[in-house]
Amino acid sequence: MSTEEFALPRSRAANERLHALIPGGAHTYAKGDDQYPEDLAPVISHGRGAHVWDVDGNRYIEYGSGLRSVSLGHAHPRVVEAVRRELDRGSNFVRPSVREIEAAETFLATVPTAEMVKFAKNGSDATTAAVRLARAATGRPLVALCADHPFFSVDDWFIGTTPMAAGIPAATTDLTVTFPYGDLAATEELLARHPDEIACLILEPATHSEPPPGYLAGLRELADRHGCVLVFDEMITGFRWSEAGAQGLYGVVPDLSTFGKALGNGFAVSALAGRRALMERGGLRHSGDRVFLLSTTHGAETHALAAAMAVQRTYVEEGVTARLHALGERLAAGVRAAAASMGVADHVVVRGRPSNLVFATLDGAGRPSQEYRTLFLHRLLAGGVLAPSFVVSGALTEEDVDRTVDVVAGACAVYRKALDEADPAAWLTGRPVKPVFRPRA
Image 1 (cartoon, rainbow, N blue to C red):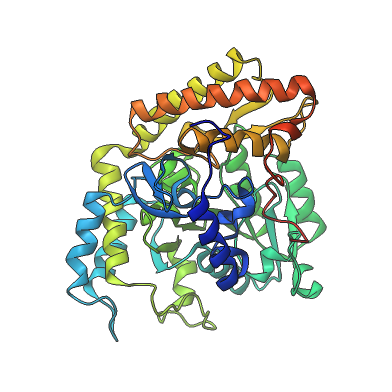
Image 2: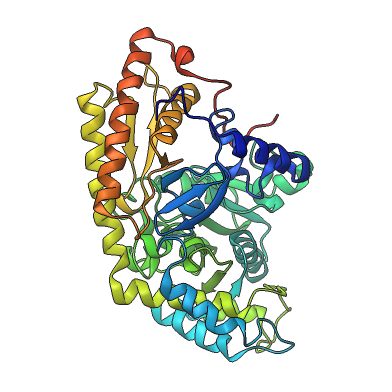
């Protein structure tokens, strides 16, 4: 199908209905149709494995599935069967289910650097609980977060630091300070500037680049020396870096860590884990002030915990993390070769760990460009590739990856033409895609 023929009339109509009923037209801003070329945001009918189908009947090879949450592929049989076994047994009771014991034991066996765990439904609740716990344990008001990492929570302590800070009092935002990733000297200077005020350092232990040698261990030492809590947000790195997360791979143990996304393979489950001495402050076996840590009606639904256990067992028994890395390496090599062959290697750039690849679209001067991203996404969609990122799932085949590379090559050929014209406008069909965090719609 040529890009001129590619149209999504049913998806377009469905998007109109979505916007009439749901603010933003989606329940996650990163899934909004503003993240795709105008009138070319597919609305999904169903998915299986590494493929999804839209309401127009088009089939796509999908990347970044469920915002990185569906790492085994859609409707994975081991996960579906585990969930199905629970559905006829009831999902939520007035007292804890035995599944809560089993799920906690499974998690702590998979992530042995943690001593206790509490489950919730989303990552925001878990990270905010970590912040609250750190403040309670230290008696300090300030939160220091890594400024180079894009998202931690929907709650005010973080969102107030973004361009979408409407509705958040400055007094709340003033309690959050930032530090740069990879720069121990800058972090130490921040801690010295706010002596005995910073409750925690919170960051993703790794993202699109590996931590500098000694960096995470250095943060551990700084946190210990300055008496603050070290929190690793492992929503993305959990399972994709190793079954035990980045802390398991790099051998640096945080005080608290948060997991989600891949943990449920699309089912809603997240986790706050960490040292017993801290976690117990949210329990009933300590003598200090009680911390309202996590208390969610649906946090321990039996089918979601069953999904989490099935995911962890599948990762360990089937070597899923190694497979994600192998698939990512094949994809990255193919995309880089395709970009080079079309003369755009300096403009279509693949970055990140093989299990968590993203791409940058740069203009003729090497600057990030939403216009060129729009052009690129349009060509991918028309070729049957749905790829807001190049984050792989374990359900991809080598044939899927090779087909993706072929489509990327075609997109890069058009990219080269647009660069030669020094203007991508002729290859756009409407407004360019937009960043998620912006002050105006």
